[in-house]
Length: 207
Image (cartoon, rainbow, N blue to C red):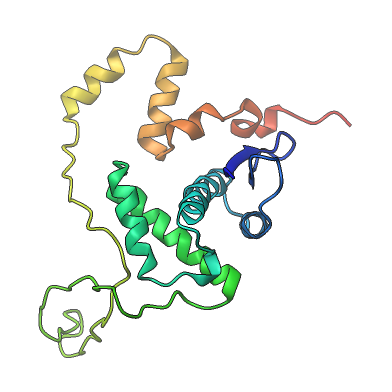
């Protein structure tokens, strides 16, 4: 049986079905809850595809979401790394798995044997530098995750930004570039923008 994420043409939101077209009940209840909580459609889409990956792995290993322990996720991490998935994506899927487990069972994912917690660099008990004397509570345990390499991003110089903007020949392209640069919009958010959204005062509904 193969899990798929399908988009509902009426709502634009994704839900999970098997290869026979049957709904995956617990997963779709989870996604519906995210919708009710007001999550972005893009966030719900990301969770849906993470759940597809998770359920396919569960099926291959003959496991159920409610029977998982944290030690089982070591195998999930290994399978994802063997597929060439990057650490940030693996960590996001681990987080999705833990949320789904909590949704199904009402409990946190159990630790137990077979898990080596992430080591924390020892820095002493620590103090609140703003207050000078306040002691800080040390966190005893960190969540299971893959170590993500630190990537330094070199920002564009002013002359490079000016050169890029001067290469744009259409007002539309300038508007797109400035919305992404000054408002922090993603490319997908730009592509789904509609004129009534940008200028609602100019577009009055017909009554």
